[in-house]
Length: 494
Image 1 (cartoon, helix red, strand yellow):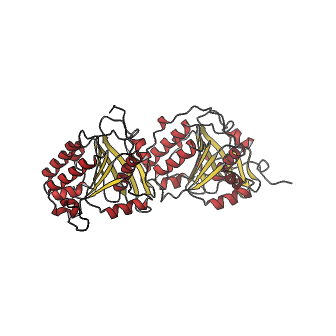
Image 2: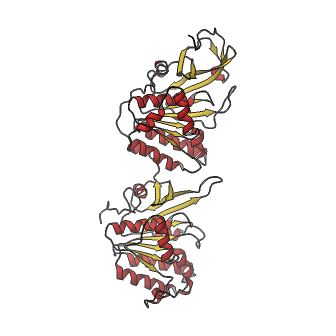
């Protein structure tokens, strides 16, 4: 075995976290509370061995063969090719070849149990073994010292047999993580199941240690679905840079493009901020529509508005987004933050960028994205890493950030302006007894931008940007006021 030799765990996401898989012929611990996905991961590990033509063995002290087959069937699998050694069967324990009598595990002497396991291993000579679970061995041992000696004896027994072993521990009898067990194993993978105050339970994975091998540390979200565990490796933006040209992304409206000296640059993120109803989503749709007209793949992640309403509203303004959806240029994906973890969302984005090669992404809105995060600080770190990744991929990103309040002083629950390359501010203002809208650019790291404030009009003629409002004051206070003549304002004239 060379230093770089790895074997697949049977799980693509976990293999990425492990930088290729597990070093073979070692003893590993998979720990987690009931329901976290340990058995499913163990079956994936053994199924990978079967696919490679290796003899594999599943030793179960806690579950019956019928229960394991039910787990496999729930994922559309069979246990064909996997040798099952069920120690709850009296015939197997006593070595008499019968199949019906049942003997509880705590009635079996620990030493005899270990000998039966060794005999089965010597008989099959497996390349992969899953031992499920250590909690039953603790019950048999009664004494912690005796239990640890038997685990050490198992490790010494498997040493030199060219066998990779996963020891499964459900933590039900240990009262928590066993530091001594951690020290005995070559690597430790921890699975966790978290119940939030609302929404589906969240699961995550962490590689606690892997001796002498580089891996992606930290927590990684996962889900259990038909087909097994789907693990979403934590995104590290610095590992995903590709060369690109940072040209502007035009909107199709010359007045709007003039605000940002041609449009947002490729590989940059633009924050569109303002109160509800000010036209933020419409502004983002204008960029998406123009990109689709050029034939560029785009995607809109919709957290707030329903897709049907969005398509009807855009068509009324002269943007036939439904046509681009049918042709596959635009993808609109409704996101339910109560059902989707942040890691899963990042995986969706990566698939669009790396497989579908999208050039423009819009997220509507950050409030919905924030609902998927249990803590705001995690939210900021996630957004920063995601935007860094998209920037390095040459993708133009539009972030819609609703602000609290319609008029007067406004605020946002999330300060993400520092991670954005450009910020477009949309505001309401009053003139001539009517509510109107103003648009301005606060910053643009990618180059020059207009410092003027222009009127924004959204109606059946689409999105229009007027001339600079020279007689305009108070936009930065949150209560803009137009004090000039009404003539320069956008009006429907014959």
